[in-house]
Length: 259
Ligand code: SAM
Image (cartoon, rainbow, N blue to C red):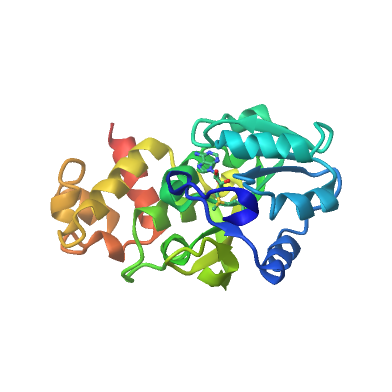
């Protein structure tokens, strides 16, 4: 029972307790005074405290009322601006840009959280997250690998990403069942994310990876005929996992141009 708090599974609570790992994460983030930093899920403050020492003030988004009450007892409003509620619904545009986003994320909602953050990429300086290692592997995966999928394509389109280091289960209380990893994400400049219709690209990517074993001719038949495949120079017999991020952008732009 970390610091007298009973960890809540439904909020994905695994609290960091290894001081070496905490130090390593903070030095990867390298927070500086005056930077706008927001921590997702501060919990019992394992990262919050050293972040505050480094940058003086912090925004935090936390859903658990008991943990919010503790944070209010421990920190002054000058140190911590507490946003009570669900990070999935939080409007990050209400915070100052350029934001540095950090957090040991609740693993049960990590994918929807990553997509939510991607919507604010223009306001973000960078993001450093602890996630399940398996999720980080999917984020940074290359084409033609088992891990490469919708998460890889949609996040690589918007961010440069780097898997920094692994964190073993023993670094947490309670210990999770899986190994974790730290990932760093830096938004690409707008000129590099120039797909004309990103919502369309998202639908195409979802369809292409929806049934991984099917050919593109099958999964993309709603949008592309044989002529389109020929014009794009893409083999209709190939599968979604063989295409690079740039190919998905080309497909979406081709369809948008036909309309
Ligand atoms: N940062 C702490 C640490 O490293 O020890 C806690 C990390 S714990 C894995 C995840 C934290 O996110 C918990 O404090 C949990 O209450 C909070 N949380 C879970 N779901 C959330 C949500 N939807 N919005 C905001 N915070 C959430």
